[in-house]
Image 1 (tube, rainbow, N blue to C red):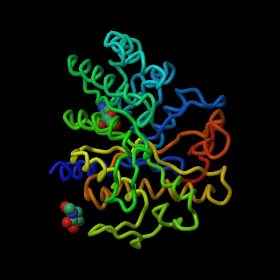
Image 2 (tube, rainbow, N blue to C red):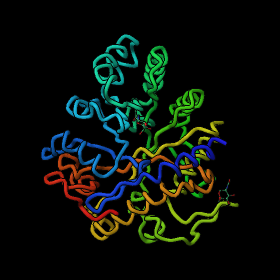
Image 3 (cartoon, rainbow, N blue to C red):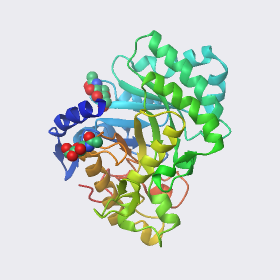
Image 4 (cartoon, helix red, strand yellow):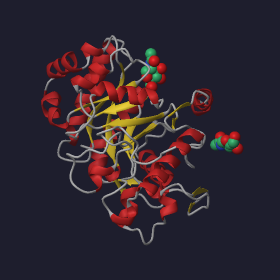
Length: 340
Ligand SMILES: *[C@@H]1O[C@H](CO)[C@@H](O)[C@H](O)[C@H]1NC(C)=O
Ligand SMILES: *[C@@H]1O[C@H](CO)[C@@H](O)[C@H](O)[C@H]1NC(C)=O
């Protein structure tokens, strides 16, 4: 039922496609806005870029003051704001600290920035900081509920939570993920707030390019490549998404929305596996897939929300592919490759 309603809304929103500079963007594809570069354009220019290409959802990794100030008055852009990993320990230890964090980092923008999500930690579950996520999610949830604010509190996790992922129906969490993630999922489920998952077919492909077909990894075939019981897969993204759904289901979490907080493909840094052509194929097909509203085999006809990583190539990230996930060059904001 929910999915049908969402699909209808989605079809309506699809008619509002914007065109500019050869770039077409759908309203339900978001972009990650990373700041690990020393040659990035000033935030107001970046917000103008988003508006010119029709981006209405962005994610920032911490409550950056310059970016949040540049977003003032642009409420048509929904913003996901991250709590820094290094702040988690202090916040998990004290509800007062959470109130202070909110007063400093979110409160000043509530009147004129459209903050839709606050994410508690980025890929800290499973890991040494993993058990600090839930207390902070709970405190922030209490805080926004007591103020009747329409902000969803969640966390961002990676596919490293899966011990098994192939075929998708064998999707199972690792023991540490069961300990740290399952209680978070149950809490989010009670609140009907999505879990955010970073999902990159590039990484499994790059680790086994002989056995995994590039077309399967880049949504570039209609042929069924993996048959998993009654469900057939022609792209790896759907298989990864469904493996996560199966793993959640095994923990008793069935209807939790899953938003893809990061996906993408580097355009350089790893020889023939990372060319502008492959990166543009992956990202273009990802947008088409999201726009289609078809969902995945396991959750068909449920439209998927997804964010491409990233806006810019970031030169202060580790050398290699990490510096080449951007859609745009930082210095002149020109597209790294023609995306649409
Ligand atoms: C805030 O952003 C969300 C997500 O993009 C969007 O659905 C909503 O309409 C935006 N709010 C306003 C006031 O534009
Ligand atoms: C999804 O939509 C297609 C096309 O409208 C339809 O044939 C199919 O039965 C739907 N699947 C589900 C599970 O609702």
